[in-house]
Structures are given as structure tokens and as C-alpha cells.
Length: 80
Image (cartoon, rainbow, N blue to C red; front, side, top):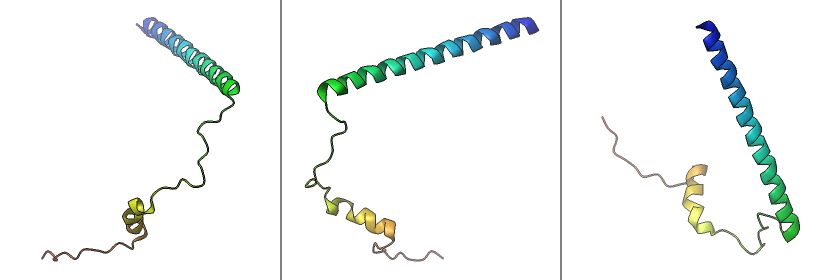
């Protein structure tokens, strides 16, 4: 049984190594293809934001006050 277990472990280790090699190969291939596309288009992603474009301050105002502890608290009756 011990040699059978060690053989399985060796096969599993080999399988994991091959999978890791495959993931690395795919990552490099994707990186090369993306880089080629960027060089072809000459674009940067994500595009830089325009200075005039800003988020609406009112949308997050309540959340910001809560985070800073400035939100008005609603009084509750004390439980006794």
C-alpha cells in the first residue's frame, strides 16, 4: 500500500506541476497578445479621466457623514 500511495502522490505532484506550467504559458501568451494589441492601437487602458468629469457629491454625502460620525443620530427609546 505504501508504494501505491507514493506512486499516486508522485503522479499528483506531476499533474500539479504540468497544470502550473500550463497556466504560466497561458498567462504569458495572453500578456503578449494584449501587449501587441496595445502597441497596435496606441491606447492606454483604462483611459484617463477628464478633469471636468466628477462624481456627484450628493450621492455619497450621507455615507461620508456616517463614516466621519457627523450624521444625525435618531434617538431611540432605551430598553429597560
